[in-house]
Length: 194
Image (cartoon, rainbow, N blue to C red):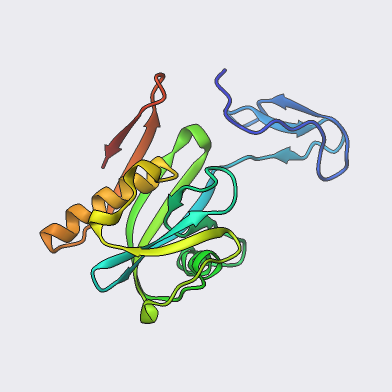
């Protein structure tokens, strides 16, 4: 069994111990409470973010938190309950870069099964070209393609997103991409597009 869920010991409903079993009518291992029989589903997290564009530049944030402290990324983070995916991307941009974006359009969706995440990234116009570091950022910078710190990009998904963005920008037409980022045994990554 190759189970890639978080470890759970106790039920969050009643506090009793849980067991990892396949519930009746299911086909996957789930944590089930030994006391109240609550089934605890663990599903992928949705990360949403944005490529804020201003003139011929994009906005990057230097991370002030782990993982990948001190490296560069696009403003993105986990979606919250009671918000849409688009609202989450705008909120993350405001939180990480004190920036507002408008005219947002879906750019790419990546599944990253080995860490149980799905990334949705939008393109949007940075209002007024105004940004400053938020609480989760050490710095922010408006950069053109020649200034992107490729060796200091925090996450493979951001690297892939930026490569697609600049490819489309050169062609003058932005597409919407869907793909899987797959971690290889040697710690490298492959990407499958659909």
